Figure: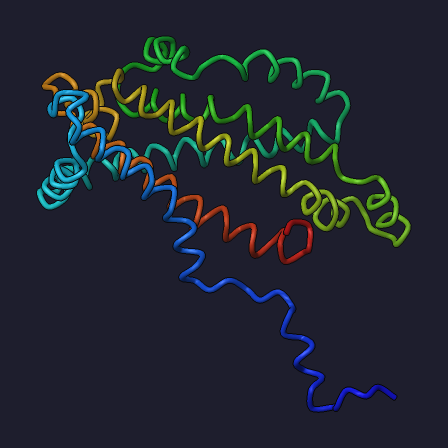
Length: 274
């Protein structure tokens, strides 16, 4: 028998890892942004650049509030987000399907992989003049170019994920009587999902860069890229930076509210990612 009293046993468990508080998580997340903001403000106040070209955070914040209250910035942001959702949604559906087919079919892999390897390194903005010639000005070339450019990282990562599914999982499921449909739903897709999410993240980053660029060229009436490009003509750096802040905020919101929630309800719950 141990000499430790029964009532003292719970004390031995106090060294176990405890989940971090929300305040600590929020502070850790905000810290790099605070450092960047401090460095920016020091540079702006030091007079290294003219105030017109390198405005202070106060000036950028004032422009952000002014454009938001006037309704101009929300209108630009909404049009850009709609184009992003349309193009990226199309790309996600097609890219995941093609990637899975390539991962499960050797013939599809032999056909698709060389094309993906050749086209993926080409910058999205390099395709913009061709898409403008093929589809004209306006929303159509912007949506299609976003879908085309973000397609390749989604295909490649989905294919990698399907190929990375352990053969022992497949054989075990088949030994337990799983047909092709159950094998696909219960083994292939869950096993490849971490790679698919990575491909979607990379595809979304490609989509953002390309969309902002083509909005500057496609003569769209509204959009963050158009707003930034128009502000450049008049040296309204504060307006340009306000647009950049909105782009970053939307990207962060998509990461926190979409991708991390998908991870939490799928691969983390399944124990495939910590």
